[in-house]
Length: 131
Image (cartoon, rainbow, N blue to C red; front, side, top):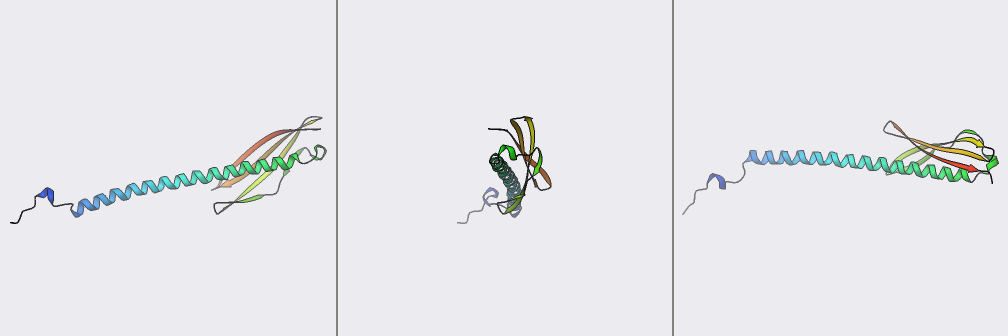
């Protein structure tokens, strides 16, 4: 005996399927955009961490110079190129040395870099004492 299908038992219509797929597509677009935003923030933080590392290495290099050889003023240092996730980031370090008194110098290490047209910098300060 043939049973007639009720309207509620017929399944999904083509229109309902298309609407469901459109909603899923819109949700995935939002998730993709959020994923790209997370990757951008992660890269920016990695580049910043590397800038801090460059400043620390410049500070270590400066501390190996004898006190008498340190000259007051701004000293531009060579550009440091680092590869980060397939990107080459150029860091431009500089030192600014000022005299506090006869036995103490203040050294400010500034490291700058650019990312997508925005200039960033990190600054570290220390005092060097004549031994």
